[in-house]
Length: 138
Length: 420
Image (cartoon, rainbow over all chains, first blue to last red; front, side, top):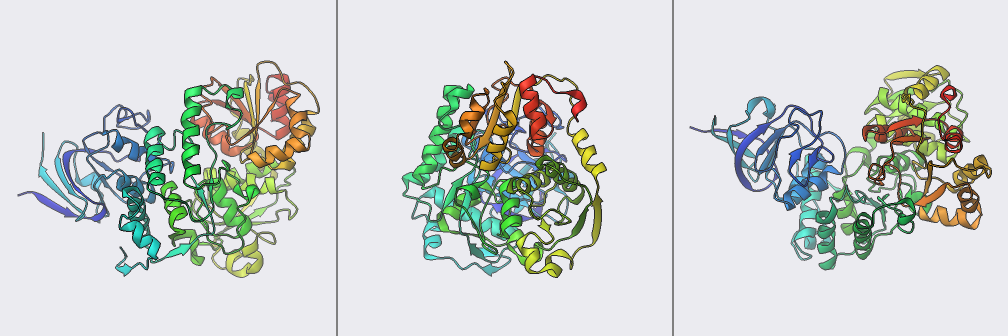
């Protein structure tokens, strides 16, 4: 049986992918290279890791409002995560994922960066606001 | 179309946008507006007098992808229905070659500017749109995106805006309204921390130091300053706000006896919700100068004055301080202003006085948004605490000091170490 978690719909659509989990706040603007989809913030635990095609599980964003356009640009370049699961979505990430048509869910009542593990296969339903662990991976 | 289960009343124009009558991009912007309202608990949209279009710098807009998005909006017939002032950009529109900006970089930025103009924006390219005609009055709602612009509008005019998302200001320019939450609401505008200013503030940069210091302490609480000089210059007010917003996340402050909300209702805005009090003396102000000036290498290759953008009085002051001395060879000096200020300063002869020394009076851009790193600068001196914060993050060695100290360094070519 797969496990289903209910959160809040931020951006519509359904997507699957391998979870990439971080508990450290990230800024997309200046923190993710929009040309390669790789995290370039040297101080971040995921420095050098590619976020394209993953289900990115993260705490609330930090930093610049320009992150919105970076998320959109990643999406246009087909380098965006397949979906985003975030502790609490702020205006910046919300605007970015809607424009970039990236399914996104927040507000679970628990910390998603503790619940979901890197490598698990997740199905995100941004329209319903649900996340399903399809397989434990590994 | 709901916020906490409340049905949002939409205008005919908003319904048409949401319906896709003006294309996919405009539809997405309306969806964004309603989702932002929902996640922030806003139950209504309020009319805004004017907006500031943010992320106008070429990197911030995401290069071609962002500009093409804007172009598709314009192609679909979208035009702004309220005044929309563009924020600072990455080049000086007329003088980019003069400061060595690569052609390809400038052309990408100019294409963006052309696209905003097609949408009906006012190509103001400044963090101080007030100098160029955006003059809200007490209680007006506006939608601004630069932290320095937002804190000035909220505090100096008593207008109402959050640090709005760049795309939200774009949506607001199209439909004329913005979600009402945060600092659009009375209850979030009341002062929370009383700041007793015992320091003697002699020059504008002292206000930078004060703002930098207080922002770190108050974080997201609204400060109420006591004992500030009611005759402080407009530029000093700009410096205080921009510094405060660079270390804190609060986009509003009150000054007892000075700013409009607290003058209108001293008890409500200045007292009712105040739960803490701090004191700032000369000691803290001096310590902040020292802290902002940590670089040990005395060499300077770029001097920057104009964050926030200079008023016309400040440009005149810079001309007076330089007093026909010559800038040291190998040092670049940028004085940044809005375009209309440069034009006024030109008519007044101040641009000529400054440029005879070798310094450059620029418009539209600033040291933070221009490709300073690409241009090869390593050691900056500036009289702006906000620029000091950003440029250190970008990896430059940065000196912070008074306007005179910075211009002195420009003439000598190095920073006088004992000058702190």
